[in-house]
Image 1 (spheres, rainbow, N blue to C red):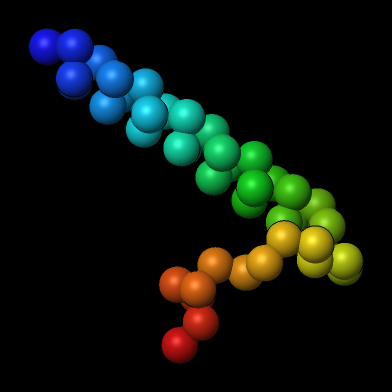
Image 2: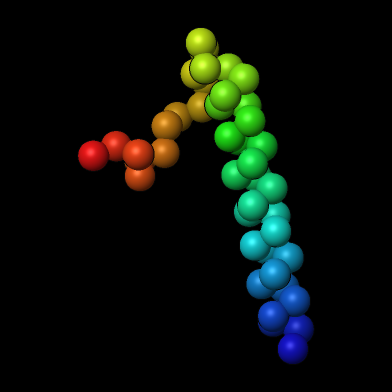
Length: 42
């Protein structure tokens, strides 16, 4: 089951990226250099 292991690794990388982007977004709320995700827009 190598596919499952690769999927878990990709999921962990995506989670780490999302956490890093979220932390940067909170830290630089006064000067938003990162675009807002389209999901938050109505």
